[in-house]
Image (cartoon, rainbow, N blue to C red):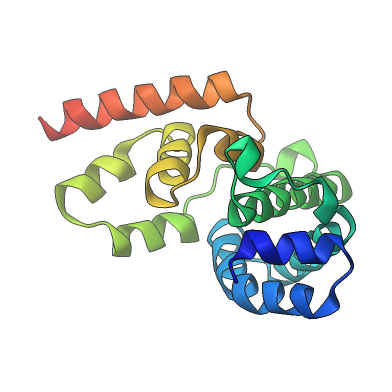
Length: 176
């Protein structure tokens, strides 16, 4: 049974289908969320909120009729919940202006990227402006769509498209 069928059964209140959907998708979803957030507490909260939303809104899943997949739908819910969690955290922990200083150490995500992608391509990726690198990483390395990247990064889709184009042009120039 595929994930789309499981979501359809969850919409009918089938707990066994929900448990099977969770068993199949939660490890994958946790890994993707951890790529975006190192805080295990936030990841756990987002996981819980995501599956609660799936249980409550499974009937709203349009599926293949809207050119979507169950896994894509699930990731979209999780990405939105992650953005919401980041916003909540930002509102709760505002730093005074004097404490907002540029980080000197490389971000953990940049270090992981350096281990994953090496050579000239890795060097070029690291030289990209962070806003371009994040879009390129989401779309190319994580395989997200423009819409999913926009939700995840909290940007308009047009901004994602233009940054992706600028990133590709910059990468082409650096690798030439």
